[in-house]
Image (cartoon, rainbow, N blue to C red):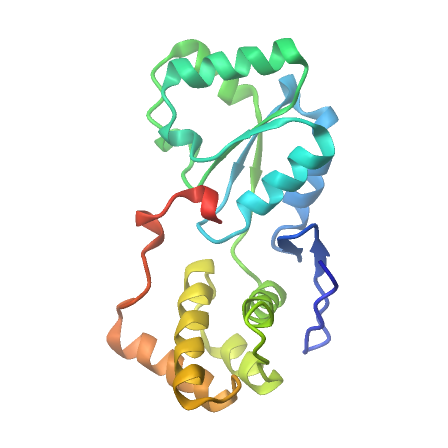
Length: 216
């Protein structure tokens, strides 16, 4: 992926085909690259829906030759334990991914519990200003639509930052711009944010809870 130019004197690093690196996920990015030092060659990647877990996992897989498991919280204890043992036998690092804390996985198998507790925990933080701007630019660049610096600045100062809100607002602005055959201006950003705050719903946006983690 080519470097994405950002306003506000912010320049995230583009990685592979899918994710940006800013302060909010720089530590996670570094830890994923240091798979050789993971305890028992196993790590757990925790991040909200839309935080780039899948893209990060693919990059880890490409570089390390290891395995990754999306939605590890949904995998049966016995299956997860077998995969852990198999990865140890194959001498391949294992990355377990979820949007839920390990304490909420409902693990009952004692041997699996102990192995998860001994694994490296990697967490992706909430999006910062640079990540928010970068994700908006990436979304619209993929659709061949420009988004103005004024629009990014307006949203950056007023929106509640979360990966879910970035996706919802990007979709809403895309609809408004398509209807009016315009680029993404400050006026469109303002209207999308106002509708989001006024309605308090995500009509037309599939809730992350209804989607699988591997999508983002």
